[in-house]
Image 1 (spheres, rainbow, N blue to C red):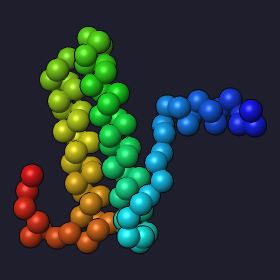
Image 2 (cartoon, rainbow, N blue to C red; image 1 turned 180 degrees about the vertical axis):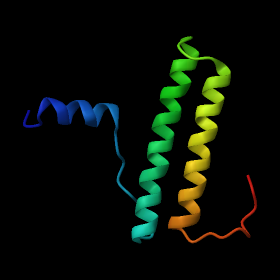
Image 3 (cartoon, helix red, strand yellow; image 1 turned 60 degrees about the vertical axis):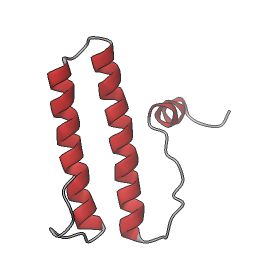
Image 4 (cartoon, one colour; image 1 turned 90 degrees about the vertical axis):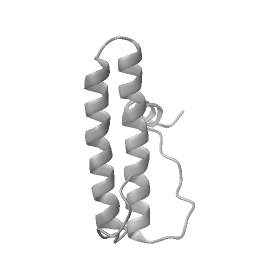
Length: 86
């Protein structure tokens, strides 16, 4: 195996899938942010499920991540305030 131990651990903990859409720098950056959101959400859900954090804490952490993702979507994909709220 040619990977350094740190690389292997990072690949396991933070896997990245290749981008498969219409290429633009904004689309690529948003895709990376979306993958990061999914990974962090999965970790938070695991912590809550195993009793390490409360449901309220998990909810607030995921809500904050959602607002960050939504903000990056507006910045990177040029969506204005006319987009419907979800």
